[in-house]
Image 1 (cartoon, rainbow, N blue to C red):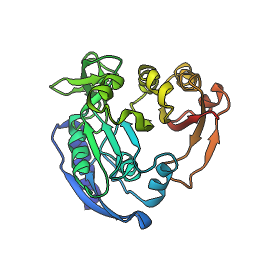
Image 2 (cartoon, one colour; image 1 turned 120 degrees about the horizontal axis):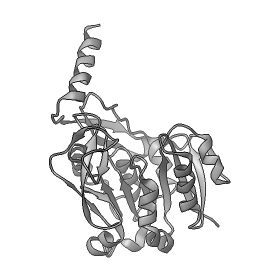
Image 3 (spheres, rainbow, N blue to C red; image 1 turned 30 degrees about the vertical axis):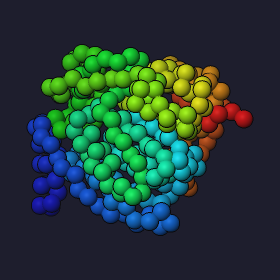
Image 4 (tube, rainbow, N blue to C red; image 1 turned 90 degrees about the vertical axis):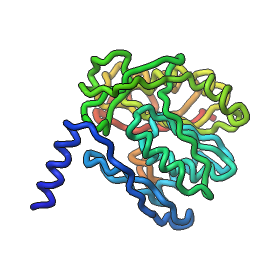
Length: 276
């Protein structure tokens, strides 16, 4: 009971009082992938992440050693690290996240397991053009949130004092990673309902390299927005699938038409592969 009360008070404080919560380093045994260190975030509003081998195997279906993989909305690195284990030391995984609080944890995860992967964190949102945004959250500890062009946002009332930056991904890769762009095989996007706009902004990149795409169909989005997400991806020559979780053993269902995506009222993940 005392533990419950203590945790409840900590969560209430995190919702109302802005402070930083440090990383907590854990070790996970991933079977054939070996043991890795992972930095969880000690924010009491955040569920603790466990990395396991079925999760890595899920990404290994699409990402191979030497590839370039990109995680847009990487958060602390819960999917970025498994992706990086797949690209390995001869490849590169780039994790983008504009939230200054979670970015520090992502940086920590990039600094771990240096003999296993190359993971480069970037503190940017992905946008149509290079520009500045406010980062807004419903919680004072910024456990969630999204970019906004104004301080008034449906994402919440807590605003980071410093603006964050958005970059055009095509230009960013051409400028900073010119030798890697041709190795792009995988893009994961998780941006609180902004996924379809990001996909529009990187259309040329998608059409040129045909990477596997993972995106989120945000539960709070309108049916029209969900259908648009489906159509934006499908129009580029992709088959689209719903999957239950980032686990190689999870259930998968092909979404044959755009109306199929609105059958899910909750937030779901989809992946898209180029049509044969």
